[in-house]
Image 1 (cartoon, rainbow, N blue to C red):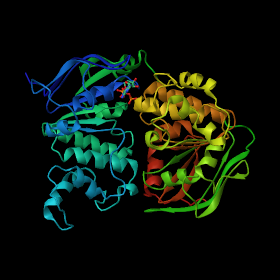
Image 2: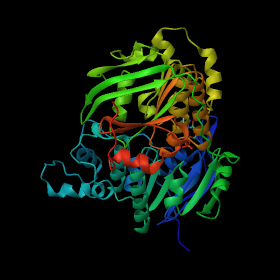
Image 3: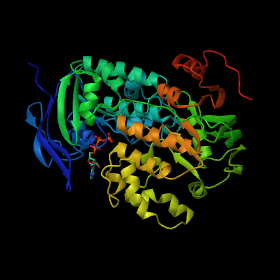
Image 4: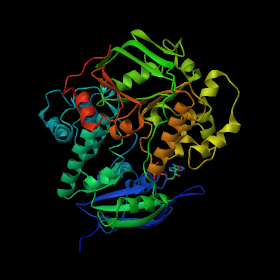
Length: 499
Ligand SMILES: Nc1ncnc2c1ncn2[C@@H]1O[C@H](COP(=O)(O)OP(=O)(O)OP(=O)(O)O)[C@@H](O)[C@H]1O
């Protein structure tokens, strides 16, 4: 019988009174992909951070190759062939991809010249995994998905025997995810143990050998893929089977224009927006589809007042939103869920209460502490403790916290960028319910997503952005499907431009 490369024996990890990992037993084998599934806050990341040395077990032990693990920190873990790619990145955005890879590479010589042939080795995994990424691009010019792939290359470059990926596909496009799935299988075939923390059942179906399910800190099941149906697995994760149902409210009979984008132009390194015009009515949900890096992130930043437009205007209820600073934006009735909320939308060393009150602070309004507890409960933020620091929330719960602040009160418009990223299936349902409730109450919703199935299920219209331009805006009349949208996103079929 094959020997485990890593073995958790009755491992428990406490943070104060909270038991994040509770008496966990799990074996990880060479050449296998082990998927770890569980609801938000179940303890998946903490379990793997114990193997990677970020935390030490409160009790129990971890064996590596049959010996008690001597790993006391990530640097140790890397020396011992354990690498982890986190949900939040640690790349230096002002440096190029190549320089970031060199910085993290144990073999980097003291001095590296542009023509140093030895440094080609550091790019070998990048070429295999993400040939579309230019090693000389600055990291700040990469899409979030591309940054994720560079992080993965950093880990592959240390020749890790155990590669832990914490929700690697949550920020990848469908094409990037498919490439990553193939690559994960290739790693396993080469004898590497891959641990895949994920909420996406598609990841499991595409590449897992075994599935470990966590619930409230405990490992409640480990079985080979295929032994249990996906609905059995969801029941193990959530305590009951949760079906994914998305249906936006009916459009109001009378169309009242609410959010109006008029010929917006903007530039950022490597990207320009050209004459973006779009009108969204009260009660309408417009999905914005596009291949990552085609201008959707820049457009969101312009609408949110973070990036200046060079020309054009955005009006909400007839009042211009453009040329504000961020404090003014916070005071506007626009609910904004940006991508990467940990980086872009919370202050980690502030409490949940203060984070929920950020907008009130910006508008100079009185503290709204009495609402905070209700918001935490309504948006299933766990643990719902107002005095807890945001830094101690799991990734999914942090996403819910930002949603609670932005969707928890009535808004005239909602700008939601990948609002369900990193969420479990029941939290996804809850977020869609809240977004649609805002639309039903009269908000105009612009919803950016790469999940075409969800966009088709939940939008009244779908706009397609390509190369900084809106190339089409389509009524979601039942005829749109992944293929038609995919063709417009990639430009394989010519589409009429929107006036
Ligand atoms: N440094 C910390 N201090 C205090 N509590 C923590 C800390 N890290 C994690 N926790 C808590 O431990 C629990 C498990 O968190 P963990 O991040 O492991 O969950 P997860 O299953 O990975 O969730 P998600 O799917 O949302 O990423 C959560 O309740 C979280 O708030």
